[in-house]
Amino acid sequence: MLVDRDDYWLNSEYASWISDPDDKEAQKERERRKREGIKPPPLPVLPPVGMRSAKDMSVLVSEFVEKRAVVEPPKPKPRLADLVGQWQTG
Image (cartoon, rainbow, N blue to C red):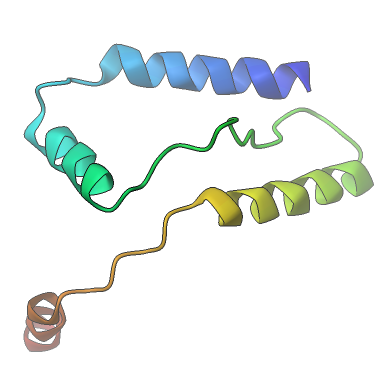
């Protein structure tokens, strides 16, 4: 579990190092999440990345997928204009 937590910490830190708070796309995404009431989970959902036996890994992966499904925001419905555009361009 220590490897999982270190990996999560490093990825989180790296994301904060390379992200630009003034990026227009990031600002739009933050506004969308705020509008839709999407909040981060109270505790982070850590993906298993450490070396484990196949049996242990399969149990941890299934638990991770279940936890992530609970806290993952619902996918937004596609806009009709986007669907029509896809149909016209193939």
